[in-house]
Amino acid sequence: MSIHMKGRCVCKNLQYSLELDSLDDARTTLCHCNSCKRAVGTNYGLTTKVPLQGFKYETGSPKKFKQHNGVTREFCDNCGAYICEYGEEAADKFRYIMWGSFDEPEKIPPKGEFFCKNKPNWMPDIPGTFRKQEIKE
Image (cartoon, rainbow, N blue to C red; front, side, top):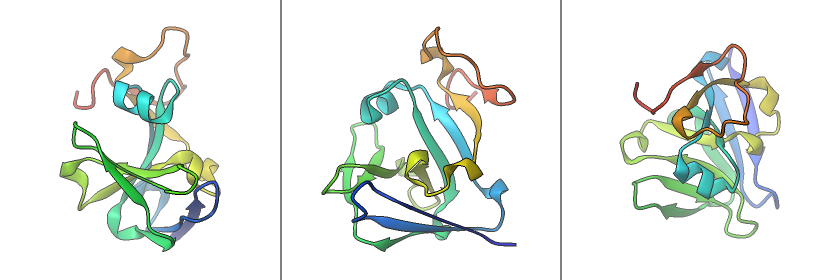
């Protein structure tokens, strides 16, 4: 059974759709790396990794910004809301969609956390999820 999801930026200029074979094809995680913290302006990034072939923009075209570390972030050039990001190695395979941009984000709850070595001490662990100190561990 195919899963169909939609999402958008704040001003609705960018709207996207996502087709998955199952919810197991999506992985939502928190990222505590300094790059994500800086980009989203809070203590973690919250993204959902999905196969590129199931993701497409239905309305609008994103503006792109490539960071010094090779991560490209796509966002609305009107309201500034991030829609997705990807590294150079994942560019032709995956998109990491900003969880809050989904119309129904609760369908894909977090499965884990990365860069926990940078996680604030005051932030509690999420029960039932994995925790990694680095991205590759």
